[in-house]
Length: 200
Image (cartoon, rainbow, N blue to C red; front, side, top):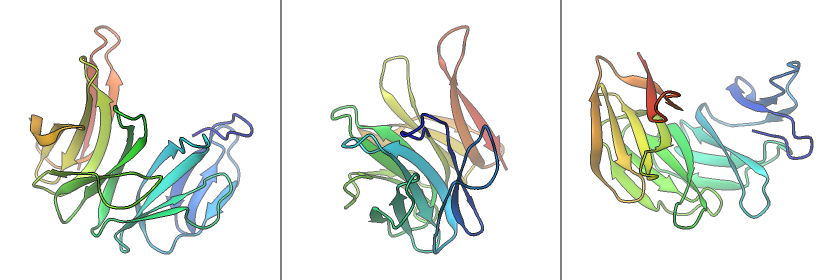
């Protein structure tokens, strides 16, 4: 993310002792340390639409919650979302109807993706039934302009869903092993989205 005061890039990392914010260009010691009380499985960054300030969402493994912090000022959590299950993956996107940020949480035991408002918190807005433990999430826009959610799952598949409608998977990719990481990029020759998959 970008520090709004300086315009400099920052990177958020979880390691023993908390979530630490670094300057990825200069390196050096952590600029901010956010104390956390549990192991963090996933991080995601978004902007608060009211202020433009960056926020970092942290998925606590054992608490079964997602905590949202100010990564510039540090301090206590601004929002706590009680997910009710272990979250192994996070992805942020904008609601196409409102432009408001949304947070997709991939659940390990329940085999679902729950979508929340990371600013207001509260109950889930959308539930997508995956049918397998979720290890990785990423959001992309297809050629039609529609937003899609790709889920890397423990059963050796990557499933692609309509983020607005939910429902059944639009595409299912069969892999040799579970997908532990996903990344989307644009093919420079065609402009079409491409999905990179890291497997166990």
